[in-house]
Length: 586
Image (cartoon, rainbow, N blue to C red; front, side):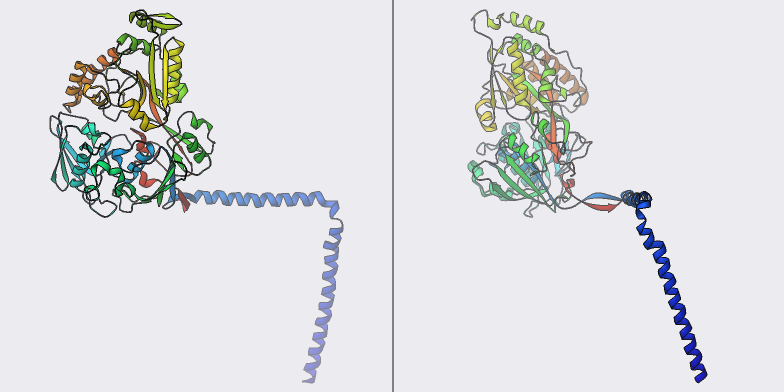
């Protein structure tokens, strides 16, 4: 045991001695290869800097490679939720579409209510509430079948009773609904709970376009006073069956501005919206809308045409698309001086449409009341810019020029009263057209209205103008009866030229009385020949949608064909503002 202890002690002493020698050796090595190297670091600083730079480059390249690799399998995808805010123009006095006169009120109608039919993304008519529609051979009896399982926001089912009620209310003279004249002479009847029959006064092949109207609930309005619906409780809390439900309206103190709060309808029959809510910011001036979109207070607007879109920041996206709408100069053919065809033709010849296109930033000039995309026709020759021809026609009309054109009989200057609305590019078009005519010696008394209701009341309905610069919806079908049939003149309908031509009346009645495409094409060729000769109006340009929108949101598809500016809401259930990272599908 003692021997073992001595050996153990000797081994431990040897180990301790070896550890001590090793420690001394390590310290010397550390001093020689590290401490002394630090003292001479300045001698190799260039090499050190190069190595550190190389290390930084390698780390940066690694990070960049990681980012690229992540981008290869990850993307931002739109997800449900969020709020979309759109700026609109005009006061909000009503939420009932029968009285809507401003774009703010029309936007409410498009988002709260459903329609029987609508224009799809290809510009074709398809069913919304309607699942099908047919007509007899004479196109004067139309039968519409409704989809079952569609509900109003309060849970009541939408049935044929609601469709019949809506039309009968529009027709009722006590209601004083806008567009009532378009339903004059039409009888509507319930066949069963989901079938409605329309009997027209005469055949109308384009009748499906009349079926794009908002359907209101009978159970919520049948006891309301017809003569004072604007004071009804429904006007402050509307009920529809559309993609959004009405929540509240927030008025701005001291102004006519307002914000309408809408919530997503989870039971919407075309799919629950991605969005949680939709805000309609109603402004009364283009300047306020421009400020709101510039400051990011709204997501989008369709109200800023030329020249307002030219002053917006590059971070905003402007989506421009042609519409099946046209801006025309309508001549009041029922009164002097434009009851003279030669004067109308002279004004057409002194109109340079290219300059109007520049003034309005429009895309396409407009030559005819029917678009080539509506129907393939034999479009006749119409007057184009030619001042020599204009001079010839004015001389034929009995005018002589001495800087201004004067009547040879009365020695009065040729004066025309021109009116328009400050909406879209209308004011720019009217201002430029007036300048062109005045530069050729015609005196133009131009009136531009900012209040659409005053414009409609004081000018449009009584036809108090010689020339009206106005935008009309041309639809997908070339139905000319509302615009040029004599029954629609004198403030009754949309015949803004007060055009009264028995030949045209007969042609249009014949075109509408059949669904045969060949017959209709022949009749519309006949109409265009008379129109080009008589010139009750001249087309200026095809209207465009200028949709100013935040580029980081999803709205309508790029391939959308627009019949009207309201087509932007066709796929409103797919509008989205929220995104989150998602893995790409291989």
